[in-house]
Amino acid sequence: MFARLSLAFSLISYLWLQGSFAQNDPPAAEQSDRVAPAPSASPASAQITFESVYVDGPYIALTFDDGPNANLTPKLLNMLAAHHFKATFFVVGQNAADHPDILRRAIHEGHEVGNHSWTHPNLGKMSDDGVRRELQKTDDAIFAAIGKHPTLMRPPYGSITARQKRWIHDDFGYRIILWDVDPLDWKRPGPAVVTSRILKETHPGSIVLAHDIHPPTIEAMASTFDQLERKGFKSVTVSELLTMAKPRPPKATATPRATGTPATSPPVHSSPAPANPGG
Ligand code: NI
Image 1 (tube, rainbow, N blue to C red):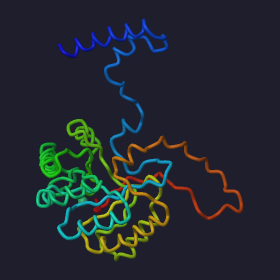
Image 2 (cartoon, rainbow, N blue to C red; image 1 turned 180 degrees about the horizontal axis):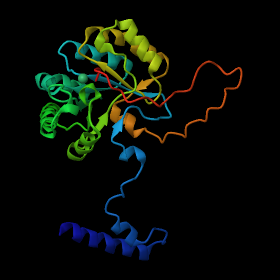
Image 3 (cartoon, protein in one colour; image 1 turned 90 degrees about the horizontal axis):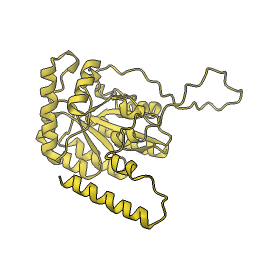
Image 4 (cartoon, rainbow, N blue to C red; image 1 turned 45 degrees about the vertical axis):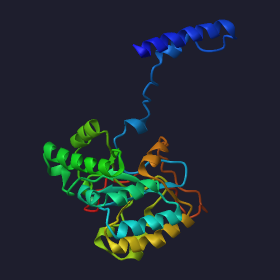
């Protein structure tokens, strides 16, 4: 009722203005009919799952799974702040419920929190009801901590079926975030190895996977962040990175390189779907 009245009122004022001033505006119908902008059909908004995105700047998304951890996550937050890097934390619901203060700090400092299930099971092998419980409990714990619902989820181990992705997206509104850079830090290969793997594989648009529950991973981040920064990378949250996504240019045809081309190769964006215990 009120909406209709105010619409009529704005129409009348509009017509009056049209009569009084120069008529260089679009017709009234075009304005009053357009209640909400038409949904854009861009590929980025239709896409549900992301391993990396194509961007035209030095942007990456650092992601940390399985926490928060009472000791390690605050240390990591200090390091991120020192480099002005933003990160995304895919939290295990049980840990989120235990440490809501850490989630609040992360959000306060510009980071993002995503859903990584309640008990870290292999979702791809579970019933829909079981998956729903895992995600709902974690969504509730995140909401209780930070007052808003996550919009991203990452399946543990990267394990999820195409059908699950669809209904999870429809029912929870989540986008499903995988990764294209995996240093296998959960195997604890040593901080120097974690750093060199990340430095070697990361390119603009990368989503980097690591875990804030392993002390050597946090140790590795000091040098990793230094070197990423020196290379000009800027880490943003996954949601921010997704908003920067541009259509991928057509794949370059396999023409032989001109002689004398420098050894540096352009970023490669085609990465296989990850499937390992890291997520
Ligand atoms: Ni995980």
